[in-house]
Length: 266
Ligand SMILES: C[S@@+](CC[C@H](N)C(=O)[O-])C[C@H]1O[C@@H](n2cnc3c(N)ncnc32)[C@H](O)[C@@H]1O
Image 1: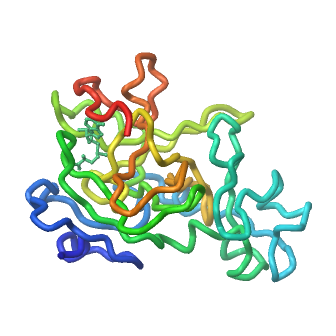
Image 2: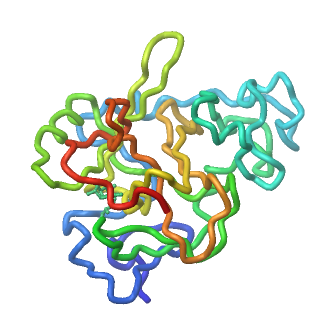
């Protein structure tokens, strides 16, 4: 079995495999594996690097400190590092802010999950009618972090240009994160088509087993994170709801509506 990183020259702290016989031609020849978000050329570097202040909690953890700046709306992870049911429900609009390198708490603080990276072994395989897809090779628990949807962070103009250049039937990778804040709507555009991580191979399903949520850690740019909505068994394909197959236009991953969904339910 080949690892995906052998092929894409990237790195990750856990093995992501290519299924036996999986056609490597299906991976764009211009694709480079990057484990985390990078700014696209022309993106405001100052904004990309703008850091978030840390908390001043005791070393052990921020879990019980009601004054913690990072968990001011309550801790969203259990002591096993699983996202709570409340955190998993996007309509709750919970703000996920993990502790970062500016915080005084230790690496064992319960509010540090995504920043520890991928823990689950995965396999990229040829899915039925959807191009490539991703399966997990071990059990994933409800609420467990799987991976990020990491790629190039684009300016609005660059996102518009890339979307406009898409041709009928092209695969879409540009994900628009819209966050509704008291001061207006905050949009982040992520495109892992040319530079991205394993998240770029994850397909859509109308009844998905993953939730997709923005999480902030070191900087103001959110990480788009995938967490298990239920326990997932080894060998199951992982999917999340893109949004673009909806009849209304509440889409989060922009897509010219060219393709029917091949998986109505799992
Ligand atoms: C982010 S990519 C996912 C990985 C992609 N399958 C690949 O081979 O690289 C999104 C594209 O995958 C395809 N796709 C994902 N989920 C699908 C589904 N449920 N039905 C049909 N096509 C799907 C569409 O072409 C979509 O634009």
